[in-house]
Length: 329
Image (cartoon, rainbow, N blue to C red; front, side):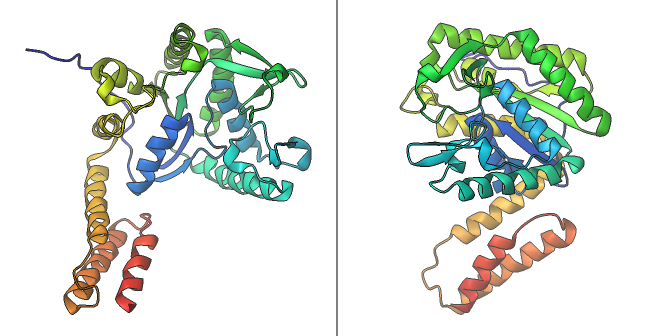
């Protein structure tokens, strides 16, 4: 008996290694996957603008990163005792304008420095609905709870998304021929838009990505995170209490599918070694001051040194500091 509908994972997706440099941008699903990539010791920059939901905000952010944009106070506004950027998530907001600008520009400089060496750009679209500022006529990434009357809400068309990304990616592929772009659509439903409007939105995103794959068949690909949750895990037990966001089990399932499909054999081996080190450090000893535990910590440091000798780009600095701190205790 076949008790579920399996989703066929596409062939030909990029096989990522720990030597690759990655950038993830998009919805909170991109943030979730990015956090797991960082834990797995991949070299990646995750959401340098914070969470972004719609394709135009993501493309605008990418263009600003490419241009080496430097934000000034004229790009901020003050509301509810904080300074905000309409292009950035609230994580960048602060009661002090200088602090908001410091956070924004520091992340912009990091992302700009990464671009020439970028191997794979992973973009997660969340919604095709956008909010345009009535004052400026531009699409905002975050309304920061300003009154809804300040904005015009509309749904992007497939053609609008495709034209924007065709222009952007054509330039990027010309400058960086090795770059691959991997699109996903967030499985998180935007029920505030209404379920029918959410379905239209997701369909728009899927159609736009399909068109981009046709335009750039060698460099643009799609991973079916959306289909894995809605079709393969078609049950509310795979959702959080809000019945909208995926549960931890569902996120882990998608992550494991992504790992099998998109990671090289060497990358999977490194991940297994890194997880072994993580679990070893999470172990709570009966006697932290014993010689046996100090020997145990020494073996972890030795394992890290062996991995760094073979793969010098792996960052185990935090783990080594934990070991040295415990050894001195």
